[in-house]
Length: 385
Ligand SMILES: O=C(O)CCC(=O)C(=O)O
Image (cartoon, rainbow, N blue to C red):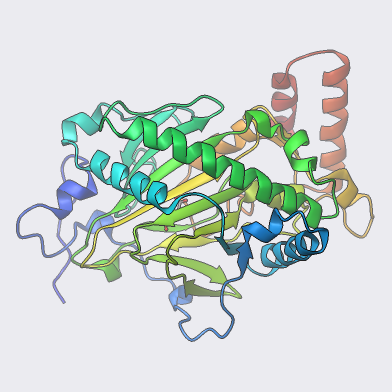
């Protein structure tokens, strides 16, 4: 095996440019990830990832719908991940958004740099790695992240991007909202509990396009290290090149792409809302030495100003005290983005609070409400807790 490149690149370039540099046969040492003992990939797994037939979830037949809701709840509890079929988003549109994202990454380095963002709340952010300003090891990945809702944004290049992204995001958002109704119901809550409490009418929707170019030493690096997703529900598609691995029963399981379906996973904020009944599961993307892989992940979150806490109905029982602190979604995004994924979900890295703290935070929110003050009061108090 060839030795790793001795020195890091002087200037941070895109992985695409690096991968295309003539004669590259080894990767710069800055891209080398340490091996972990739990890195073994479980290939002969007997169970397969659950599938949600979306047409049954939206069926007018109440028996069919309640069976689909039950299966959805089981998928959230057992895997945190599931395939979504019969979702009604045209296959041609799914292909078109992958192609348009590919065209974006084909722009010149200078053109792409025009879309570089600095802050997690910048509505358009092109970049490389995870967050190159904090990463100690670089990931074999370039990305483009664009806020699609509540305000729609788009890069102005390539010219086809805007129209395709607008159409794709609108359709995917409808699917996500419907699945979240099912998630709500499966938790024994009103079907519109998540929608109303977290103000999904103003919910954040992000289009995150990931580019993983072929890598000469794929076994040494990582496209996207283990992480869980912020928000409520992510719907992912890819260009039929595998690479996603999901943690299941302590092992990594490769999930093969299935044409014309979404791979869905619940995010950290469903874990919080469900008080841990549904876990936001770690996943990662590995790279290969042959094919360019493109994935489009679409996280759907609460409104940025929504404060997320365990649903009171799910914590009223003293055998099940609140396990998570109330936190504004916007603040959570900033915390998550400020650290490179470290193999733990962001929740595990400091979100747990005991019930005393949660009661205190609810008291603060109550008084903030009485005083008619803004959410900033809540935020500053919550951080101080
Ligand atoms: O590319 C993939 O398959 C994973 C992407 C992902 O996990 C993300 O964008 O959060």
